[in-house]
Image (cartoon, rainbow, N blue to C red; front, top):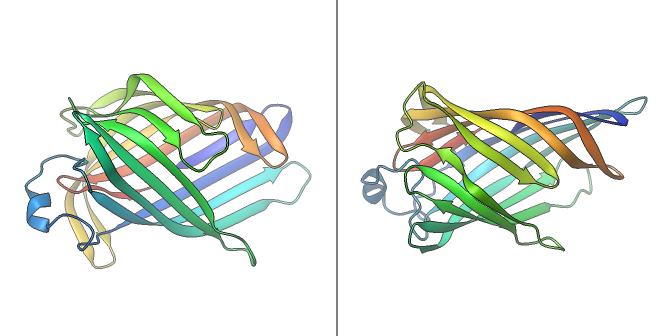
Length: 232
């Protein structure tokens, strides 16, 4: 995600950019022949697993104060932990280690409910390592991908909510691109842009702040039969 926000009553600016690079772990995924035979843009078979390298640059700029900029690196693991009918439960575990000396690893874990009926949609999400737990139901579901996501197609995703903030997202298929990460190459990947305004509140140093203006943008590359191979 790339996020830029300004907050009411507190003259601050925060930006955060996260880059995810897919690492194909053949020993942890289904055999290549099985993956190639699945035409889904995000296969939701039980035990499917994806692992990513994550690099994050987060900058917090209060007025008349020092800029707080944090670089972090880590991993993101997504795995299908169960399925009932059209609904798959996908656990997402993010581990980040800030670059500062003595910093502790940050771990965030949640379980999302996905449906692959008529495209891809998110039914809800529940945090796993928060007290109190955070749980959100989406009615209607967030429409993550349409049934036929061809270049030029646009649609309304819905309003994603988390940590007091609301992201009113729309999406567009920008085209197809080849993706190269180190020694791996995925051809004709679907490139999708998710973007929209932010409202509500966000956690900041010392509490929370109301968002005055804000925009979010996310670029995702999907490889047919494999899933997401890059995010920015």
